[in-house]
Picture 1 (tube, rainbow, N blue to C red):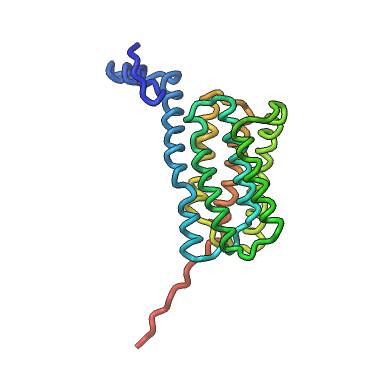
Picture 2 (tube, rainbow, N blue to C red):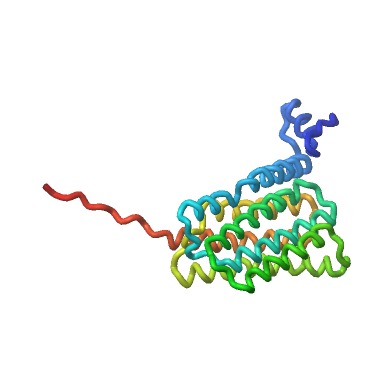
Length: 238
């Protein structure tokens, strides 16, 4: 079999089968699709939160957004990224976490800006994160504590979505939530379940992606359900 690798993806078996006029076998095709989808997610993740950021800046409003949800999201991304780095998983299996973390931090900073004046507890939370996050990302903590943190990050992501889901339900509106960002979050979670299984990632990683499908799907459904149709303007009769 001819080796044809690019970015850690082996195209050799697929190209070999196609040149013979044959359809690649499942054992060859599925890993290839998984790798390609993984890199597609990484590429898409560089802009996934940009629509949400732009929507807030455009309307100069954070109406209907739960600050706690976005803060917990930053914590969850930090723990997940640190764990994947520590476990030495391939970049295609977790690369989007780095871009999502950066965008999530920017998003929280923007929400802080439009939430002035900030309370003392908000400042304390922000300073604690800045003090602890570098240590977690460097993996300079006890291995057992690291495993416990990663186990808890699934709960963190779940509870990061719950306040926003409740806020949407309570208001019967999704406020300034971006449909495009929510759609990409949902799609990314769906694809990540598949790629995690193919990359033989730990089951905890797969479960985290499955929770993402559930919670992101709920928020996306709320945006669709609570979207208010634009009133139809009646033409004046002469």
